[in-house]
Image (cartoon, rainbow, N blue to C red; front, side):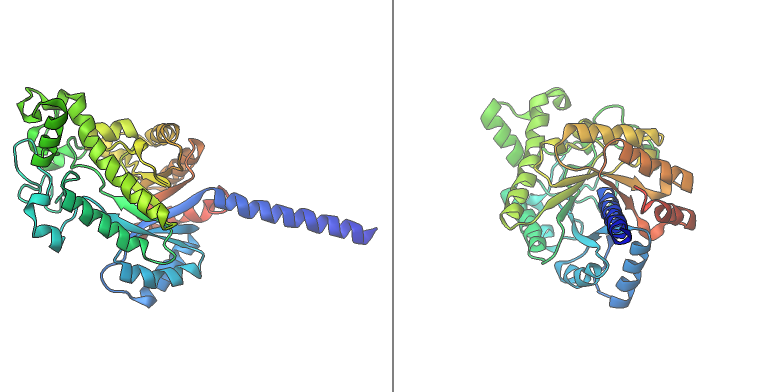
Length: 353
């Protein structure tokens, strides 16, 4: 009798542990981080130990395939998944692209993104309409697909330059954007205009207000969408996954950066819900999360901005409100800069969500 009771108790305990393990995996902590050009094993072991202590089980790493190949075996020992974080269309310092100025996106004033760098010097955007530029982007993604053990090719900057900046960012550049200003309105590459003219018999530059043309906007959205979905198709044919860092929710993304990520065939999306950029409160993170979840049929991981969540209470609220509104996890930008109070929140919640 005692043996029977013991066995039943053991089964219940094992079952509880199993459920606990499953529950822990239901909500994921991840972070974006940079790898740099050189691999330092000691430094990476230290970083991975730190991430593991916070319950971070996935890292989105900006680095070369060569460096990623060295990080993955170390991460595997901690059961941490590694994604290859790729600057997709914005390609600052790309030595191949720099030799081909005609590859770059063109604004409504006729200046390309290599010569006229909107807002910041590192804004150097290729045109999704130029076939050689597209091939170059796809080849960059293919290189990441060849990295064994990579959790996904993680696309970032897969859009046009911001036609409208977040309200909190505009004063930083001494601008007020109450309309779509031509110097920030990109996608007018000669190839784009010619292809549009073939369909509609109109040049968008001849429109009195090109920004009001829904056809012209959708035409540019489609160029990004087909590029992403081509990368996804190639990746899936190699049994690889594709994820993306995107703007907060699809309707907002369309307006601000010409990005219709609800039309993409992703394996997951990481909307960057940096509420302070838009002069919004933490509740807005929940709203944006829910909108993204409702708009797509793939998992959403809410991107949180640590400098905008300065104390533990704010960070904990942001994490919980993301989960409550359907996110499968959060990704913090970036765990490397968390203060002690923020770190304590991760430690507190890592086994509770």
